[in-house]
Each structure stands twice: as C-alpha cells, then as structure tokens.
Length: 422
Ligand code: NIG
Ligand code: FE
Image 1: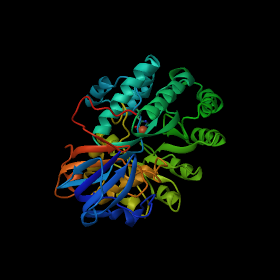
Image 2: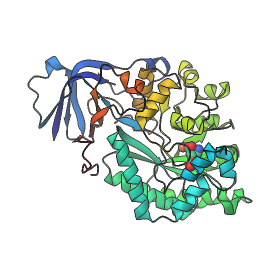
Image 3: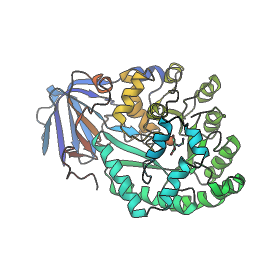
Image 4: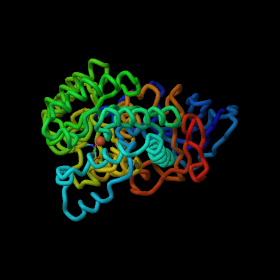
C-alpha cells in the first residue's frame, strides 16, 4: 500500500527532526511547506518535500491535492466518549436556569450517566461508543484518549476498560486509555467517602492494573467531588501500579491540583478554567502539559482557560474536546480549534500546534503522532480547497475536511459504507 499526495498547497506541521512538544514562543510558529508532496507507505510517512523533487516517485494511489491543505490528524487528548445514552433532560434543565452543580447535587450529572452505563450491556456500550468515535474520525481526529469514570463500581469500571480495549484493538484510530478512577462519589457512599476512596485504592486500581489496558490515571479534583487529600491518596495508589496521572483540575475551583499534578509527574493537567500565578509557577520546567477544553466552557457557560497567560509564561498548551454527555457533548476538534482562536485568543498557528503535536504529547504518543515527520504514523487530514490554513479555524462550525488518511488508509468520508476498523 502506497499513497502519494501531490500539489499540496500547504503541508502543515512539517518537522525533519522528531519534535515532541512545542512550548511558549515556539507555539507561535507553524512549520509549513508550500507546493509540496507527501509519500506514505503502509501506515508510515516515508517522505515529503517540494513538488519539484516529486518526479519519479511511484505509488499505488495518487491524490491530487491542488489548492488543498494537508496536516496531521487532530490528536484529542481528553475524551469520555465511552458513555451510555445522553443527558438531554439536564441540558434543558440548565437552559431553564439550573447550574451544573445544582443538577449534580440532586443526584443528576455523572451519577445519572453511571446509572445508565451500569444498566447497558457491554456490547451495546461498545456499539454506541465506536459509532461516536467513527463520526469523529470522519471529521479529522486520528488519535483519541478515552477515559473510564462513568462506572462508579469496580465491575462497571472494568467493563468500561474492556470496551476501550476493544475499540483500541478494532479501530484504525490510535487510542490511549485512561482509568478515571475517581469521577464522582456514588449515592451509597455519600456519607462514607473514605470507604469509597478505599474501594478505589485497594480494589479498583489493583484490578485495573491487572487488566493492563490503561497506563494513565485520572481524578476529578474539585469541590463536591475529590479534594486534594483524596486526589493525592489516589495518585499515590496509582503510582504503586505505574499509572501516570492525567488529572481534572481547576474546572470550577482552585484546590491545588495543578501543583499536586506536577509533583506526581502528571503527563497533563486538564481544564484550568480557573488559574492563578502559583499554578503557572508550578508548571514551569516540568514535563506536565496543561490542556484547555474550550468546548466545555462553551457548553457550560463557564470561563475559558486563560491560554494567553499559559503560553506567554513560556508553557506548552494542548487543546482537547472533553467529549462527554454532561459538559461537552461534542468531540468536533475543528470546532475546538476555532473556539481556541475565538475565545482563548490563540493564533491559528498556536491552536493547530495545540491540537496536533501538543495533543499527541498529552497522550504520550508524540514520538509517533502529531507531526509530518519521516517514520511517524500516516494519519492526515486533506482539506477542501482553501486559500490559507487560517481558514480552518476562521469559518467556525464548518467542516473543512474532504478526505482523510488514517493508519495509512485513504478513506472516502462521504461514503456511508466506509469502514474505519482494522
Ligand atoms: O471533564 N469534570 C468532570 N468530568 C467531565 C464532566 C462529566 C459529566 O458531567 O458527565 C468533564 O467536564
Ligand atoms: Fe473531562
């Protein structure tokens, strides 16, 4: 299998050397090759360059990309896309004035999704979830982090892990599983939270480790959910089993989760709608990447992550969808990239960097994904004819994509019969 894409108007995120992350000032530059070709063999990027050096390259499939832009597929480093049903009733409740916290306090929210998931068969959960994922592959996402967290019992959490594993084995997309061990406190444990923490640290984490599906561990560190001590206890227990943290922090309140994440060498700290100077200080010179989730701010009407403060402090930043039924029921990364520009005041260059190479870093896969580099996996987006890459975020809520290559396979995204499974 070989694919040659010719006459590319702009080939984005091209790096001869294997870049793993872009920080601060470096995020302002998007490396672009004009009038380029890209050559793929099997699932790998083999070569690229100026069209004048393309002569003599033969391939089974040739795609003429005249007037089009080619870039690495979106790398969505934060999703909860394995869930059952939806929460449209709460959507209407919020329109009518209830807040996210008020809905959660009366037993809705995450607890609602957990009840539904516990009552859904593994097969049905798999079908619902892979269908969501495939809709997103068609609009440009090639790598997804997927969290558990809607189980809230050991058995249901392990069921979620098995579903994520099956998706990982069967999908052409790259999947990074995360054990969201502590997402909410179940009703039965309301008055005895320490028992629930014990269940997580002494039963769930060891059993999940034994399944050997997820390498990352997550906690919803937030008022009314898990405080800083709970979070530390869970990260400590995870550490024993070699889980690396990727945690929910500062969505509504600052509890010190950012510094805790940095202390435990978290791969990422996500949300950060609230942020202070100490948080920024805690992230300096660390391997932990902050992740903004603009779709969540949009949907809940909460502040947007102060991306400028983070980037201007020299830090890296990734953007992700947070796709979940309660706070961000869309995984559309084209929209996330637009929103990052419009609301987080990121430049198109910064937003595209944040959604490709830095998104890959936030999943621990940027050695193989997130840039056009020889030897990296061939996951690319081919846009419709566009004059400039800035048009991708500019025309918000449009679909700029015409074709995709995923795991080295060219796909007709308009064909409803097209298959995205191995
Ligand atoms: O990332 N913050 C915690 N978890 C999700 C929302 C979960 C839900 O409401 O179902 C989030 O926003
Ligand atoms: Fe989330």
